[in-house]
Length: 584
Image 1 (cartoon, one colour):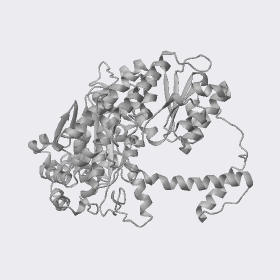
Image 2 (cartoon, helix red, strand yellow; image 1 turned 90 degrees about the vertical axis):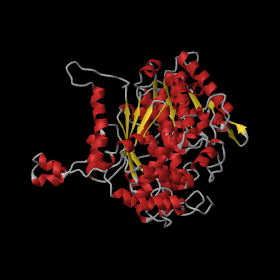
Image 3 (tube, one colour; image 1 turned 30 degrees about the horizontal axis):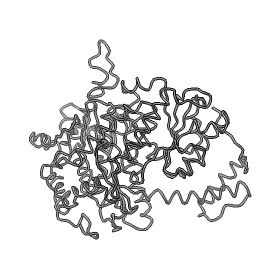
C-alpha cells in the first residue's frame, strides 16, 4: 500500500463494512446448527486445537477477512519481520523476537548480520552461569550457595517472566528442578514491593538480577540501589559483585554500579520490552530457578509457533486467525474489549502480560486524544506513516482464570456489554486431584465450565424457554439471556514448558497481525514517555520542597493542591535522607 493509503480505503474493508448488516441478521444459535461451517472453523497445529465457530462470522466473513489480509500485504509484512527489515520505523529497528528462540543453525539477519549466533552465545553463557549457581560452584560472599533469586525489572522485564514462572510453578517436571529454590520479581518502585520481596530472605543466599537495557530505567535502578544497600549493609560493599548480576547492554554503567561486566548478559535493540521474555530478560532468572533444560523446552515451543506463523496458509494459521478475528470484532462489529479466560490457575498471570502487549497501544491513543484526534479510535491514533486513523483499532484486554472470573465479571459478559472471549483450556492438569465418591475429578469440574460457558454466551436463554420452565413473569426480563456473544476456544494438551512457549508466541503474533492489518506500529511505545517526563518535573519539585522548603510552582491548580497536601502531610520525611530499609 502507498504510504498515505489507509486500510479502510481498500475494497475488502468496504466489503466487510457492508457485510456487517448481513451478520447482524443472523444469531449464533443458527450459525451453530451449520455443521459444515463449524467444522471449517476448527484448526489444529502441534497439539493446539482452535475452535472459532462461536464467532459472529460466516464462511463468507472469513473469505472477506482473508482478502483484507491480502490488501494489507499481511504475508509480505510477516516476511519483512522475519527477514530483519526495520518494520519498527519510528525507532528505525528490526523486530526479531523470533530470533530469540530460533534453532542454533537458523539464519535470521538484522542489518546484514546473522543475529542467531549472538543469541546462542548469550544462551550458552546463561546455561553455564545458571548451572554454576544451581550446582553450588558459584557461591555468595560468605561461601553459602545462592538459592534465592530476585529479578528486578519493570514492564516487559517483569510481566512476561512472571507469567512463565507462575505457569511453571506447578508443572511436575519444573517443580523437581526448582526444589529448594525461590524466584521473586521486584517491579514496583513502591517500597512495599521491596519489603515483600526481601521478607524471609537472607542476603547471604540471595542473588539479584538487575534487568535494564540502558541501566538508566528510573524505577528499576532505584530498586537496584535499594537491594545493593540491603546486601552491602549485611555483607559489605565488595559482596555486590558476588550477589548481583545484570541483563543490560550498558557495560560502563553496569561496572560503575559495582557489578562485574563479565556477569552482564546482553540483549539487543531489536527486542522490544514486551517481547523480551525469550531473551536474557526472562531466560536468565527462569534458568536459575528451573534449570536451562526446562527453559529450552519453553523456547522450542515458541519456535514451533514461529515456524507455523511464517509458513501456514492463513486459513490454517492460528495466530493469523486470532488476529483477523480481533480486527473483525473491534473495527467492524464495534467490540473494543476482549476477555482472556484461562481455565487454569497456572495461567493467572497470562492476561496481565497480554494486556501490556495490547494496552501500550491504547496508552498512546490517550495521549493523542489531547491533541484532538477522534475519540472513536481505541488504538493508536495514527497509522505507521503518521496518518490519523478514522477507524477503531486496539483492544482493551482483561481476564481472570476460570472459575474465579465466573463469580466476578461474567455477569457483565452474559447480560451486559458484548465482550468477545478467549477460553483457554488444558486437557491434562498439572496437578490432578481425584476424590473417591465424587461424580467427576476436580479438573473435570473445572473443564465442565470451560465447555459450558461458550455455549451459554452463544445461545443465551429465551423468553419462551423460561415460560416452559414456569418462571414467574416478573423475573423473565432478569433471567433472559440474549446470547449471540462471540467467543473462541483454545485447547492445549497440557501445560508444560513447551506448551507455555506455544501459547506465548501465538498471542505475540496475534498482536503483530492486528497491527499489520490496521497499519499501525505494534512495536514502539511512545505513549509511556509523556508520563515519565512529567514525573521528572514532579521529582525535582519534591526534592526542592523537602530540602529547601521551596513552594510548589509550575503546575496546574489541581496538581499544585495535591502536591502541597502530600508534602504537608509527610513533612516528617527528612530532606537529607538517611538509609532506611524495610523492617518486616
